[in-house]
Length: 158
Image (cartoon, rainbow, N blue to C red; front, side):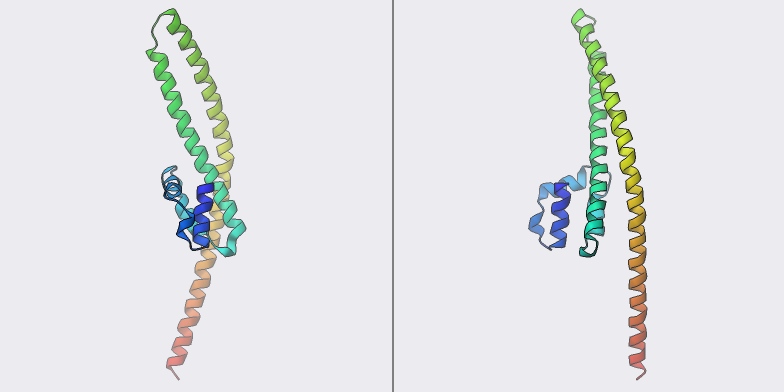
């Protein structure tokens, strides 16, 4: 969230020094969610509150995605360790502990998945709202362009 806020503030204040290379790398590579593009699209003084809400929703979704990915990797590591443990008494005890840990990881993953579902529902609503704003902006720009063209045409006829 801090990296996203730094980037948004750098756009709003037109000061590239407010965002670091580490912030940009984090925003660009931590998720399949296009955070930079979303921040670019919503960084406007006209939509400050909306922009903050959208950013929070998408950053939270990106965080859930990163946590789920890390939990998947950890789960795979634990499964590999359990299958590689020897058949000795120590190995059997370690394998049992690994199975308990693996079960706990599965519980945490399910909890994270259910929480992320709520975030992704918020993302869908936010995306719908962004689409409406983009449509309104295109309509206003189209109307302004038509007015400008009509005024230019009128001026040529004088």
